[in-house]
Amino acid sequence: MALLLVLSALCAIVIYHLFNGYRNLTRNIAIAKSSGLRVVVLPVYVNSVVWLATNIVWLPLLAKLPASCKGVWFDLLDPEWSYRLGYKPFRDLGTDVFVVASPSRISAFVADAEVVTQITTRRNDFPKPLHLYTRLNIYGRNVVATEGTEWRMHRKLTAPSFGEKNNELVFVESIHHARCLVRLWTGPDGCGEDTIKDPALDTMRFALYVISRAGFGVRVAWPHEEEEHGEVETTEAASMFGSQVPEGHKMNYREALGSLLENIMWTQMAPPEYLTKSPFKIHRTVGTAVIEWGNYMDELFDAKKEEIASGRSTDGMDLFGTLIRGSGILDEKTTDLERSDILGNAFVIMLAGHETTANVLHFSLLFLAMNTQSQKRMHEDIEKTLGTKNPSDWSYDDDFPRLFNGMPAAVMNETLRLLQPVINILKSTTAGRPQEFHMDGQQYTFPGDIDVSLSGGIHRNPKYWPAPPDYESTDGLPDIDHFRPERWLVDAKPTEAFEDIKYDDEDLRGPSGEDTSSHLFKPVKGSYIPFSDGYRSCIGRRFAQVEILAAFAVIFSQYSVELAVDEFATDEEIEKMPVGGKERKAVWQKARDRADHLLMKTMGSIITLQLRGTTIPIRLVKKGRERFLFE
Image 1: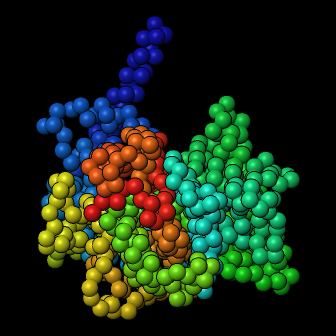
Image 2 (image 1 turned 90 degrees about the horizontal axis):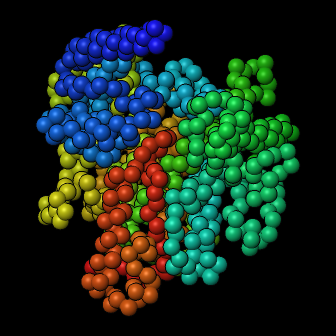
Image 3 (image 1 turned 180 degrees about the horizontal axis):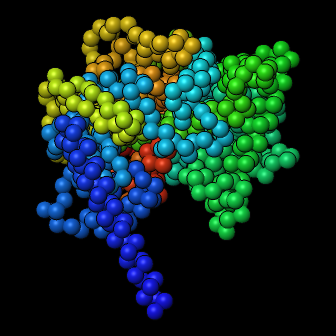
């Protein structure tokens, strides 16, 4: 009898949820149709935690449905569809803006530049959906996870840290750490030619160390630096951390921050003090990392606060110093800001400045290894720009603008076009406040209380990215789906001078510099949004551009990057094959096909879009010693 009662209760619960879900879906479909836009109906809300965690189970099962039962709705169940499919769903629906109705939420997706611009310039009408950003409040409220007057406070607090005057330090530090990265990959003698099995791990380290020094005054030593020069020492210019675990800590600095950033999703399960008691090692590790990095930040905060109070000055970006001075926290009676506000902003700046830049460098190297003619043009451009100057003599004022006007910037821009770190930039409408907008001369309405995604599919909308007149596809894919940095190189005079956003409050200050060089192809406003656009565009945009181009200059001034082919042939076998011959090309093509497959099928987002559960190995070889260069 008891079992019967339990089964009856379970059946009643299931029936109730099915009925409630159907009722909500019916209501949401009616609301979605009121927009005047095309509507797609989904059985689940794709951004829900449950679906994000379990879709890898359900999607393969749903894929077994007959083709006649599938369509755009099936495509949109993949959380990464904006990357994997690009513009295809918009093309299939015959519109650049559509609405998705599910039982729990309504969403809209936008791939029209005119509509993107309307959304990004109407900050109060299209706020962030903050319920999706709570995971970033680990150490405190911050500029990424706030809106309205609170956002303005955090924006004013953080903006001064990203002024143009700080980019010289970013340039110098990026050169230093890029040289360390190259030495890691090629050995002390610089000959290298060993397989780099996981380049993503090392580019993450590179970006982490640059933001640590430029943003926080922490010079993190690479393991091989310590081996070559012995234990690092603290200097007046920067605190320095190596592999040693300082007294009072359980992890060294780089281990704590690396473990935290690589496993940030686990921080949503429970507070760190509970994670440290989990039976699973990964939980204990990330719980300890959260506590340890917080302790490091507390120590750096206290040291910087004492430094400022005593009147001493510091060099460079000095993020903590700028945050403390701007907050007024030295006089607690005159400010509403708390210590957690500074630590919260420090964390999200570290997160954003580390992971996104690392991804761009990593995928640029892969794309260039897969497209040897573009890499050849990169070599030629950097040689023309920098000549034989030693990297220690490169200048931000003289050399960065030339890198930004040529092939290095074209490669960066093209990588961001195809593989922007955040594939859907999320906005929303407020409950009870539907928002009208115009598209192609017609008026439409986004209902209140919906998510509005600025889709990465806009980067592959042929309306904004035309193919060259003589383009012929060799693999059946359109030009917009190919990595072709040459699309950014135009034989024309520079376009009009850059005009920054006209901020309604000068203290908010936007990120310095334009998205793309005026000497390169200038996309239609709103059609190129790797850094978002408008008031909430990426505050660290120029920081990232300087860092990436400095790394390109170091690497490609002396080296070429190639796909490793160890899986298909040994070094001895390759040496016996004629240079430039069919046999070598066949081996290389196998590695390229594998890379293409992994880049399409294994990419996934946690914070940013990355390869998940696999790697694409590469090699760095001295220029002139390439094994796989084909005309």
